[in-house]
Image (cartoon, rainbow, N blue to C red; front, side, top):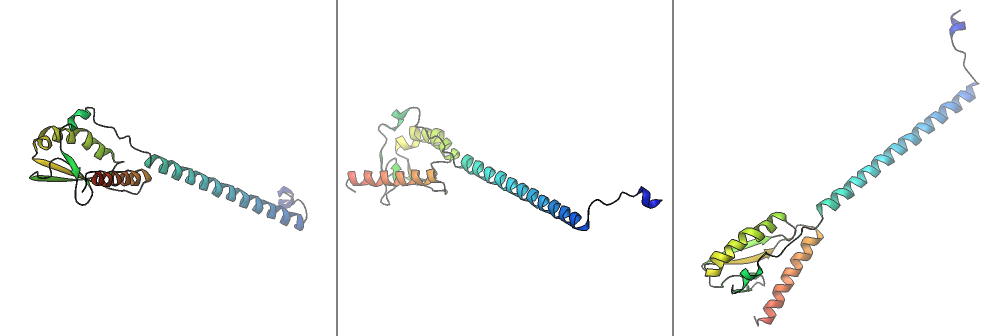
Length: 158
C-alpha cells in the first residue's frame, strides 16, 4: 500500500535527466542575469559617485571688488601671485584648491577682512600657491593661475 500512496515517476530516465538538465541551465541563466544586474547597479553607483564628487564648486568674486583698489599686488620670484607689499614684515603662504569649498569660504570672508586691515596697511603679504587634488577642475584652475601669474610677471618686466 505504501507504493499506492507514492506518486509515480513521470517519464523515462532519459526524460528525467533532460528535465533536470533544463532546470540547471535555467538556474545558470538566472544566476547570470542576477550577476549582470548587480554589476549594472554597481557601475551606475560608481558613475553617480564620480559625477557627484567631481562637480565644480562655484567660485565667486568678492562682493565688493573695490577692496582691491590701491592694494599692492605682484608676482614672487617663483612665479606665484602675491597680494600686499613685497616688503611686508609678515608673509602668509596660502595653499588653496580652486574646487575646495573651505578654501572658497576663506577667500570669500577671511581674506576680505585681511585685505581691509593688515594687507592694505602693508603689514601682511599673502602669496597664493594653487593646489591640485586630482580632479580636472582643480588641475585646470591651478594651471590657469600659474599661467596668469607668469603673464603678469612678463608684463611687469620681471
